[in-house]
Length: 76
Image 1: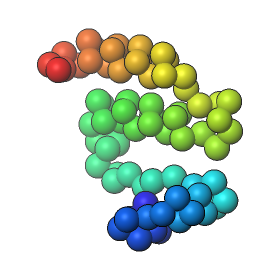
Image 2 (image 1 turned 30 degrees about the horizontal axis):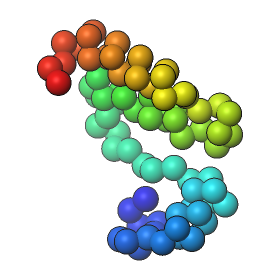
Image 3 (image 1 turned 120 degrees about the vertical axis):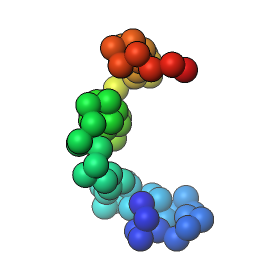
Image 4 (image 1 turned 180 degrees about the vertical axis):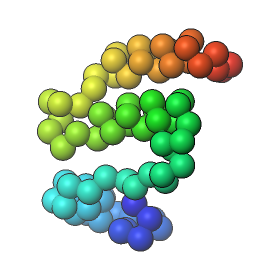
């Protein structure tokens, strides 16, 4: 939310930007150039759905991350 709210935003600042205006963080286009980052961006975006009922559950996030770690051979 760089440039949208102060560096130490209040609850009210974030409420205005996220809930009232419906804005989401911007992500560098570089994320689209890497398969792993592209998958992570997709996952993050699905968590940012405006309608809370449309957002991924934490279990779905966990399973998706586990699958990404396995398929990308990421060492954690």
